[in-house]
Amino acid sequence: MGVRISLDDLRELIVRALTNSKVADDIAGVVADALVAAEADGIASHGAARVPPYAEQALCGKVDGYARPTIERSARAVINVDSNIGFAFPAITLGVEAAVEAVKETGMVALGISHSHHFGVAGHHVERLAEAGLVGMAFSNTPSAIAPWGGKTALYGTNPIAFAWPRPDTPPNDAPLVIDLSVSTVARGKVVLAEKQGTPIPDDWALDTDGKATTDAKAGLAGSMAPLGGTTAGAKGAALGMMIELLCGALTGSNFGYQGSSFFEPTGAPPSIGHLILVFDPNVFGGAKNFAARGEALFSEILAQEGTRLPGDRRLTLRQTAARDGVELPDALHADLIRRAG
Image 1 (cartoon, rainbow, N blue to C red):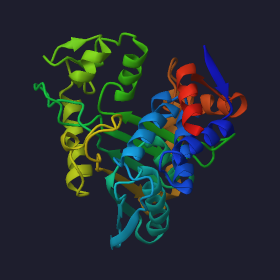
Image 2 (cartoon, rainbow, N blue to C red):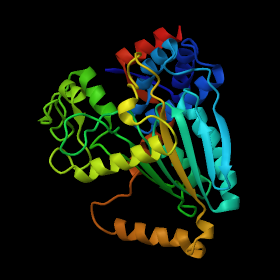
Image 3 (cartoon, rainbow, N blue to C red):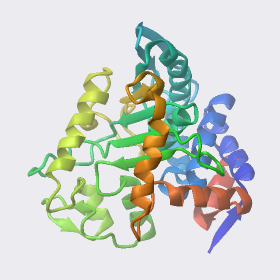
Protein backbone atom coordinates (compact mmCIF):
# COMPACT_ATOMS: atom_id res chain seq x y z
CA MET A 1 0.00 0.00 0.00
CA GLY A 2 1.03 3.59 -0.53
CA VAL A 3 -0.22 7.15 -0.54
CA ARG A 4 -1.15 8.81 -3.84
CA ILE A 5 -0.28 12.48 -4.02
CA SER A 6 -0.42 15.12 -6.76
CA LEU A 7 2.84 16.55 -8.07
CA ASP A 8 1.95 20.01 -6.78
CA ASP A 9 1.20 18.71 -3.29
CA LEU A 10 4.38 16.65 -3.30
CA ARG A 11 6.43 19.70 -4.26
CA GLU A 12 4.88 21.73 -1.44
CA LEU A 13 5.58 18.94 1.04
CA ILE A 14 9.23 18.66 -0.03
CA VAL A 15 9.76 22.42 0.14
CA ARG A 16 8.39 22.55 3.68
CA ALA A 17 10.46 19.54 4.74
CA LEU A 18 13.63 21.17 3.43
CA THR A 19 12.99 24.69 4.71
CA ASN A 20 12.47 23.13 8.15
CA SER A 21 15.91 21.57 7.72
CA LYS A 22 18.10 24.66 7.27
CA VAL A 23 17.55 25.12 3.53
CA ALA A 24 16.75 28.54 2.02
CA ASP A 25 13.25 28.89 0.56
CA ASP A 26 14.34 29.44 -3.05
CA ILE A 27 16.93 26.67 -2.92
CA ALA A 28 14.35 24.29 -1.43
CA GLY A 29 12.13 25.11 -4.41
CA VAL A 30 14.84 24.29 -6.95
CA VAL A 31 15.66 21.03 -5.16
CA ALA A 32 11.98 20.10 -4.89
CA ASP A 33 11.48 20.67 -8.62
CA ALA A 34 14.28 18.21 -9.38
CA LEU A 35 12.98 15.54 -6.99
CA VAL A 36 9.37 15.85 -8.16
CA ALA A 37 10.52 15.57 -11.79
CA ALA A 38 12.38 12.37 -10.93
CA GLU A 39 9.34 10.96 -9.15
CA ALA A 40 7.11 11.82 -12.11
CA ASP A 41 9.45 9.97 -14.46
CA GLY A 42 9.28 6.84 -12.31
CA ILE A 43 12.82 7.26 -10.96
CA ALA A 44 11.90 6.76 -7.31
CA SER A 45 15.51 6.27 -6.23
CA HIS A 46 16.19 9.91 -7.19
CA GLY A 47 12.85 11.34 -6.13
CA ALA A 48 11.14 11.95 -2.79
CA ALA A 49 13.24 9.20 -1.19
CA ARG A 50 16.16 11.65 -1.30
CA VAL A 51 14.44 14.13 1.04
CA PRO A 52 15.37 12.39 4.33
CA PRO A 53 19.12 12.20 3.56
CA TYR A 54 19.13 15.69 2.01
CA ALA A 55 17.38 17.10 5.09
CA GLU A 56 19.64 15.30 7.56
CA GLN A 57 22.76 16.44 5.72
CA ALA A 58 21.52 20.04 5.61
CA LEU A 59 20.75 19.96 9.33
CA CYS A 60 24.26 18.79 10.20
CA GLY A 61 26.01 21.03 7.65
CA LYS A 62 27.29 18.29 5.38
CA VAL A 63 25.52 20.18 2.60
CA ASP A 64 25.03 23.93 2.99
CA GLY A 65 21.36 24.66 2.40
CA TYR A 66 22.06 28.39 2.14
CA ALA A 67 25.07 28.23 -0.19
CA ARG A 68 24.92 30.26 -3.40
CA PRO A 69 26.87 29.04 -6.43
CA THR A 70 29.45 31.32 -8.00
CA ILE A 71 30.24 31.43 -11.71
CA GLU A 72 33.29 32.31 -13.80
CA ARG A 73 33.79 32.22 -17.56
CA SER A 74 37.44 31.26 -17.63
CA ALA A 75 37.64 31.03 -21.44
CA ARG A 76 35.27 31.78 -24.33
CA ALA A 77 33.99 28.22 -24.33
CA VAL A 78 34.58 27.24 -20.69
CA ILE A 79 32.32 28.06 -17.75
CA ASN A 80 33.19 27.10 -14.18
CA VAL A 81 30.59 27.08 -11.42
CA ASP A 82 31.48 26.47 -7.78
CA SER A 83 28.60 24.95 -5.83
CA ASN A 84 30.32 26.00 -2.59
CA ILE A 85 29.32 22.77 -0.82
CA GLY A 86 25.67 23.50 -1.56
CA PHE A 87 23.07 21.45 -3.38
CA ALA A 88 23.89 20.69 -7.01
CA PHE A 89 20.66 21.92 -8.56
CA PRO A 90 21.12 25.70 -8.10
CA ALA A 91 24.65 25.40 -9.53
CA ILE A 92 23.44 23.34 -12.49
CA THR A 93 20.64 25.81 -13.22
CA LEU A 94 23.03 28.77 -13.10
CA GLY A 95 25.61 27.04 -15.28
CA VAL A 96 23.20 25.67 -17.87
CA GLU A 97 21.55 29.07 -18.35
CA ALA A 98 24.98 30.63 -18.92
CA ALA A 99 26.03 27.83 -21.27
CA VAL A 100 22.91 28.22 -23.43
CA GLU A 101 23.86 31.86 -23.97
CA ALA A 102 27.59 31.26 -24.44
CA VAL A 103 27.17 28.49 -27.02
CA LYS A 104 25.55 31.01 -29.38
CA GLU A 105 29.00 32.64 -29.66
CA THR A 106 31.26 29.61 -29.54
CA GLY A 107 29.37 26.62 -30.96
CA MET A 108 30.57 24.42 -28.10
CA VAL A 109 30.77 25.00 -24.36
CA ALA A 110 32.19 22.98 -21.50
CA LEU A 111 30.57 23.61 -18.12
CA GLY A 112 32.47 22.40 -15.06
CA ILE A 113 30.78 22.35 -11.66
CA SER A 114 32.90 21.86 -8.55
CA HIS A 115 32.47 21.20 -4.82
CA SER A 116 28.98 19.89 -5.38
CA HIS A 117 26.46 17.36 -4.11
CA HIS A 118 24.14 14.72 -5.62
CA PHE A 119 23.64 15.34 -9.37
CA GLY A 120 20.07 14.04 -9.41
CA VAL A 121 18.70 12.66 -12.67
CA ALA A 122 21.45 13.41 -15.19
CA GLY A 123 19.06 13.13 -18.11
CA HIS A 124 16.97 16.05 -16.89
CA HIS A 125 19.91 18.44 -17.17
CA VAL A 126 20.67 17.59 -20.79
CA GLU A 127 16.99 17.41 -21.68
CA ARG A 128 16.82 21.11 -20.81
CA LEU A 129 19.58 21.74 -23.37
CA ALA A 130 17.88 19.72 -26.09
CA GLU A 131 14.65 21.62 -25.50
CA ALA A 132 16.67 24.71 -26.46
CA GLY A 133 17.70 23.03 -29.73
CA LEU A 134 21.14 21.99 -28.47
CA VAL A 135 22.93 18.67 -28.07
CA GLY A 136 24.07 17.94 -24.53
CA MET A 137 26.20 15.45 -22.64
CA ALA A 138 26.59 15.29 -18.87
CA PHE A 139 28.85 13.42 -16.49
CA SER A 140 29.15 13.33 -12.72
CA ASN A 141 31.22 11.42 -10.25
CA THR A 142 29.72 10.16 -7.02
CA PRO A 143 31.02 8.73 -3.73
CA SER A 144 32.89 5.48 -4.34
CA ALA A 145 30.81 2.42 -5.14
CA ILE A 146 32.72 0.53 -7.88
CA ALA A 147 36.05 -1.24 -7.52
CA PRO A 148 38.71 -1.14 -10.26
CA TRP A 149 38.24 -4.21 -12.43
CA GLY A 150 39.90 -7.11 -10.64
CA GLY A 151 39.96 -5.25 -7.31
CA LYS A 152 37.74 -5.49 -4.23
CA THR A 153 37.75 -1.98 -2.77
CA ALA A 154 35.46 0.65 -4.28
CA LEU A 155 37.29 3.68 -5.74
CA TYR A 156 34.99 4.98 -8.49
CA GLY A 157 31.44 6.25 -8.18
CA THR A 158 28.47 4.90 -10.14
CA ASN A 159 29.14 8.01 -12.23
CA PRO A 160 26.13 8.82 -14.45
CA ILE A 161 26.37 9.70 -18.14
CA ALA A 162 23.54 11.40 -20.02
CA PHE A 163 23.00 12.51 -23.62
CA ALA A 164 20.16 14.46 -25.21
CA TRP A 165 19.34 15.09 -28.86
CA PRO A 166 16.73 17.64 -29.98
CA ARG A 167 13.72 16.45 -32.00
CA PRO A 168 12.05 19.70 -33.08
CA ASP A 169 9.67 18.14 -35.61
CA THR A 170 8.31 15.14 -33.72
CA PRO A 171 4.69 15.71 -32.68
CA PRO A 172 2.86 15.67 -30.38
CA ASN A 173 5.33 17.06 -27.83
CA ASP A 174 8.70 17.47 -29.58
CA ALA A 175 10.31 15.61 -26.67
CA PRO A 176 14.08 15.17 -27.10
CA LEU A 177 15.79 11.81 -27.21
CA VAL A 178 17.39 11.32 -23.79
CA ILE A 179 19.85 8.58 -22.86
CA ASP A 180 20.64 8.33 -19.15
CA LEU A 181 22.76 5.62 -17.58
CA SER A 182 25.38 5.04 -14.94
CA VAL A 183 28.59 3.04 -15.21
CA SER A 184 27.23 0.57 -12.69
CA THR A 185 24.81 -2.11 -13.82
CA VAL A 186 22.10 -0.20 -11.91
CA ALA A 187 22.01 3.01 -9.88
CA ARG A 188 23.21 2.49 -6.30
CA GLY A 189 19.97 4.06 -5.10
CA LYS A 190 18.11 0.94 -6.27
CA VAL A 191 20.25 -1.25 -4.02
CA VAL A 192 19.69 1.18 -1.14
CA LEU A 193 15.93 0.90 -1.69
CA ALA A 194 16.14 -2.90 -1.81
CA GLU A 195 18.08 -2.93 1.47
CA LYS A 196 15.46 -0.71 3.13
CA GLN A 197 12.63 -2.88 1.83
CA GLY A 198 14.39 -6.14 2.72
CA THR A 199 14.16 -7.50 -0.81
CA PRO A 200 16.87 -9.45 -2.69
CA ILE A 201 18.70 -8.00 -5.67
CA PRO A 202 19.65 -9.71 -8.96
CA ASP A 203 23.03 -11.43 -8.78
CA ASP A 204 24.64 -9.13 -11.37
CA TRP A 205 23.99 -5.87 -9.48
CA ALA A 206 26.65 -5.96 -6.77
CA LEU A 207 29.61 -7.78 -5.23
CA ASP A 208 30.31 -8.47 -1.56
CA THR A 209 33.49 -7.52 0.31
CA ASP A 210 35.21 -10.61 -1.13
CA GLY A 211 34.47 -9.47 -4.67
CA LYS A 212 31.84 -12.16 -5.23
CA ALA A 213 28.39 -11.65 -6.75
CA THR A 214 25.61 -11.35 -4.16
CA THR A 215 21.81 -11.13 -4.00
CA ASP A 216 21.96 -9.58 -0.51
CA ALA A 217 21.50 -5.81 -0.81
CA LYS A 218 23.20 -5.16 2.53
CA ALA A 219 26.24 -7.20 1.49
CA GLY A 220 26.31 -5.39 -1.84
CA LEU A 221 26.31 -1.99 -0.15
CA ALA A 222 29.16 -3.10 2.09
CA GLY A 223 31.07 -4.34 -0.96
CA SER A 224 30.86 -2.68 -4.37
CA MET A 225 28.47 -2.15 -7.25
CA ALA A 226 28.99 -4.20 -10.39
CA PRO A 227 30.16 -2.02 -13.31
CA LEU A 228 28.43 -2.06 -16.69
CA GLY A 229 28.85 -5.58 -18.00
CA GLY A 230 27.94 -7.12 -14.66
CA THR A 231 29.90 -9.21 -12.23
CA THR A 232 31.71 -11.22 -14.93
CA ALA A 233 32.31 -8.80 -17.83
CA GLY A 234 32.58 -5.33 -16.32
CA ALA A 235 36.07 -4.24 -17.42
CA LYS A 236 34.76 -1.62 -19.87
CA GLY A 237 32.27 -0.26 -17.36
CA ALA A 238 35.03 0.13 -14.79
CA ALA A 239 37.19 1.96 -17.36
CA LEU A 240 34.34 4.39 -18.04
CA GLY A 241 34.06 4.97 -14.30
CA MET A 242 37.75 5.91 -14.16
CA MET A 243 37.34 8.27 -17.12
CA ILE A 244 34.51 10.14 -15.39
CA GLU A 245 36.50 10.40 -12.17
CA LEU A 246 39.18 12.24 -14.15
CA LEU A 247 36.70 14.50 -15.96
CA CYS A 248 34.63 15.39 -12.90
CA GLY A 249 37.15 15.07 -10.09
CA ALA A 250 40.54 16.07 -11.48
CA LEU A 251 39.35 18.45 -14.22
CA THR A 252 36.97 20.45 -12.01
CA GLY A 253 39.16 20.40 -8.89
CA SER A 254 36.68 18.34 -6.88
CA ASN A 255 36.93 15.13 -4.88
CA PHE A 256 37.41 11.74 -6.46
CA GLY A 257 34.76 9.19 -5.57
CA TYR A 258 36.90 7.54 -2.92
CA GLN A 259 37.43 10.93 -1.24
CA GLY A 260 33.74 11.87 -1.11
CA SER A 261 31.49 10.76 1.73
CA SER A 262 28.04 9.21 1.31
CA PHE A 263 25.05 11.04 -0.17
CA PHE A 264 22.88 9.11 2.29
CA GLU A 265 24.57 9.44 5.68
CA PRO A 266 24.61 12.59 7.88
CA THR A 267 28.22 11.95 8.86
CA GLY A 268 31.57 12.81 7.33
CA ALA A 269 32.80 15.78 5.34
CA PRO A 270 30.81 17.22 2.41
CA PRO A 271 30.96 14.96 -0.68
CA SER A 272 32.38 17.88 -2.73
CA ILE A 273 32.22 15.97 -6.02
CA GLY A 274 32.12 17.43 -9.54
CA HIS A 275 30.07 17.50 -12.73
CA LEU A 276 30.90 18.20 -16.37
CA ILE A 277 28.30 19.24 -18.95
CA LEU A 278 29.16 19.58 -22.65
CA VAL A 279 26.95 21.69 -24.91
CA PHE A 280 26.96 21.60 -28.74
CA ASP A 281 25.12 23.86 -31.16
CA PRO A 282 24.23 21.48 -34.02
CA ASN A 283 23.75 24.41 -36.38
CA VAL A 284 27.51 25.04 -36.68
CA PHE A 285 28.58 21.48 -37.55
CA GLY A 286 28.90 19.88 -40.97
CA GLY A 287 25.46 18.30 -40.84
CA ALA A 288 23.74 21.53 -39.81
CA LYS A 289 21.34 21.64 -42.76
CA ASN A 290 19.70 18.32 -41.99
CA PHE A 291 20.96 17.12 -38.61
CA ALA A 292 17.42 16.70 -37.26
CA ALA A 293 16.26 14.74 -40.31
CA ARG A 294 19.35 12.54 -40.14
CA GLY A 295 18.60 11.76 -36.52
CA GLU A 296 15.01 10.86 -37.38
CA ALA A 297 16.26 8.56 -40.15
CA LEU A 298 18.25 6.58 -37.61
CA PHE A 299 15.34 6.45 -35.18
CA SER A 300 13.06 5.18 -37.94
CA GLU A 301 15.49 2.37 -38.76
CA ILE A 302 15.59 1.40 -35.09
CA LEU A 303 11.82 1.40 -34.67
CA ALA A 304 11.32 -0.59 -37.87
CA GLN A 305 12.60 -3.62 -36.00
CA GLU A 306 10.04 -5.48 -33.93
CA GLY A 307 10.52 -5.22 -30.17
CA THR A 308 12.56 -2.01 -30.20
CA ARG A 309 11.88 1.36 -28.64
CA LEU A 310 13.83 4.56 -28.19
CA PRO A 311 15.47 5.34 -24.85
CA GLY A 312 13.20 7.45 -22.66
CA ASP A 313 9.85 6.36 -24.13
CA ARG A 314 8.76 4.82 -20.84
CA ARG A 315 9.83 7.96 -18.98
CA LEU A 316 7.57 10.15 -21.12
CA THR A 317 4.59 7.86 -20.63
CA LEU A 318 5.05 7.85 -16.86
CA ARG A 319 5.50 11.63 -16.85
CA GLN A 320 2.15 12.13 -18.58
CA THR A 321 0.43 9.74 -16.18
CA ALA A 322 1.95 11.42 -13.13
CA ALA A 323 0.86 14.86 -14.31
CA ARG A 324 -2.71 13.56 -14.46
CA ASP A 325 -2.89 11.09 -11.57
CA GLY A 326 -0.03 12.04 -9.27
CA VAL A 327 2.45 9.51 -7.89
CA GLU A 328 2.34 6.90 -5.16
CA LEU A 329 4.73 7.14 -2.22
CA PRO A 330 5.45 4.35 0.27
CA ASP A 331 3.54 4.89 3.51
CA ALA A 332 6.71 5.23 5.58
CA LEU A 333 8.24 7.82 3.24
CA HIS A 334 5.03 9.86 3.14
CA ALA A 335 4.87 9.82 6.95
CA ASP A 336 8.50 10.94 7.12
CA LEU A 337 7.84 13.87 4.77
CA ILE A 338 4.77 14.91 6.78
CA ARG A 339 6.81 14.84 9.99
CA ARG A 340 9.62 16.92 8.51
CA ALA A 341 7.20 19.38 6.91
CA GLY A 342 5.60 20.07 10.30
